Length: 312
Image (cartoon, rainbow, N blue to C red; front, top):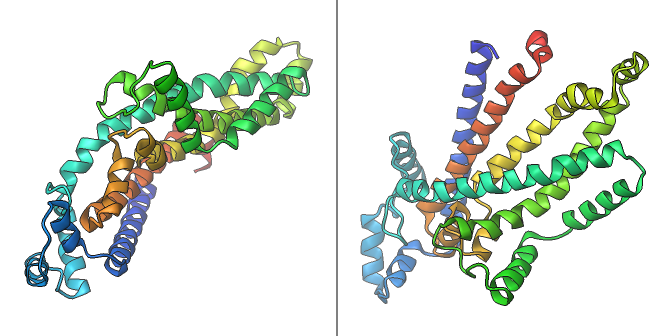
């Protein structure tokens, strides 16, 4: 990717972020609920209307919409996303503290997914319409249909309640508490990626260059490992980038089920307590993660497939 194209992408990202920040701020501004009242109630204080009005004035909630938005954006440009009402801490500090647990969960679930989906997808494609292909397709169809929250609850019931191998609440951040949430996320992803790997490998196996290699007597295993697989995995990189962005943004359902201390759990608690600054900071944070990951994936294409670099 040239410097000019990179500059254009960064400019587009900036414009999109401004639009996202405005819409997020507008939606929280229009949403029901009183964050000032919730702030008092979270501390066990039953406020009077005079106290609520005084706090609202001190926190700038009585200012016009564009004044509040401009003040928040100016703070974000300096790394200040505001102060969480419910947790009484800077939003940036809270997001950074929850990033590492979510990053651990992301890496663990992706590793498990790759270990499961890549071999199964290749086997299903190589032995197309054979018994192993039918079994893999049936299992992946079943796996895609399973909701994450149900899988998580079943794993808790079996491994935590009955076998007592793990803690029911995975809030300590230890490696043991990471296993079940990662497996829960990996099950649905593995089913989806297995089907995608199978489709990509089958498409490459039917290509003309594979027919030519076979005609020249090249062994089937060499064709598979040195020609088919490298070309098959290129379209999967985009999906993998989207999955990484989604996981780093926090998988709210799974994190709530396991009480995992990640970004998704933090966002759910922020919504329940009408913590506007924390919600706005989280959405902006997730948006940046998605854009950066997609930019990295786009740049990586130039090095993974030289043909793309030549066409550009």
